[in-house]
Image 1 (cartoon, rainbow, N blue to C red):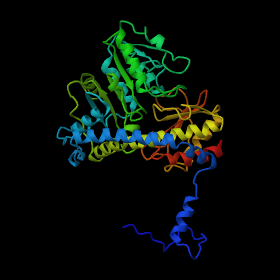
Image 2: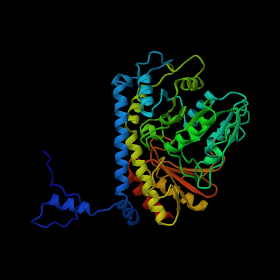
Image 3: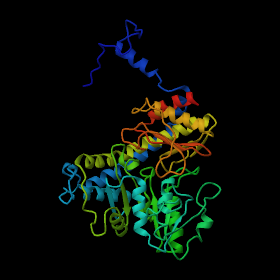
Image 4: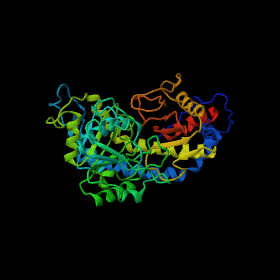
Length: 442
């Protein structure tokens, strides 16, 4: 039985009628309090249909995750972790890999704390595929900045890029509408094109992200030209944004980071590679060494629990992040800023880009986000050089997990068109509160 306590009013200055119970008046007062500035409140009220659609997506993906956990017979003993070589591990690795593979529709998966970023996981996948004399073809324009030195597009100073190992590289420019150039793709492969790289998210490019349906269409075109050409999908920021994942439409491998979508804001580190078993094993050998397989490496118990719990929560956290992108787009577009994706269009990742047009506005936006963060709100983000990036970059990430972009954060390179890339958030209302400070700052 629910009991409402009326002994202590929430607002001491609240005026109460003698004939009206205090708790009723307090509830009435709370219903009239709006924490958002008018522009944000108006946008939030207009997005109820979009938010309901996201809730349906969350339910669909949560059902898939729950079924995978049940099929893997996940138990508390799987949270125990291991030390040393990790050979006496209690089955947590196997259960986590099995559940993850089922969730994304893959034959196999390796989910490990030893992947220290999405770039690291993607690199292991690319080196699993490619050998000297092969060609890597990027079909969605330029890849994310941090892959440039991995590929050799930017000088890695002899530290072991694909180019250093004799792997050739080519990329297809995007079409005028910012999507894949389908006409060019139909005849793009060469006899030595061994791997086609598809980046699902926009990265730091001003383009729309790719849907799984578009990725599937691209894979069909690629395989028609050469069935032996392997397709690698950079899946960062895309997990759980739709009800299907790239392996379900033919991707040979996908890779990503656990401090993005699939970690559910809980995983403190790690990454994954999933897809066809042969190539997952090859990527695992790149992470460790040939012959060691996937059943080695220590993982502390607190991390294993966080991996399982984060993966279970991921659909919900991604849903809130998607709602946040709808809200950011709606508010910023109403103020005359260019946004990508456009307001109210279906999402393919958790990133919302806003074109601010100047260095000063980009800095101001990020400073406002940092001020509104739960961690480090007293600090001021400063643009600077960051390992893996060609340009100066500014990051606003007052997050509990360092660098986590499943938590509310934003960043952007200090170059034209001075766009800020917003992502994450454990609840859409976080962005509602942050946008109030952002609008004041701009």
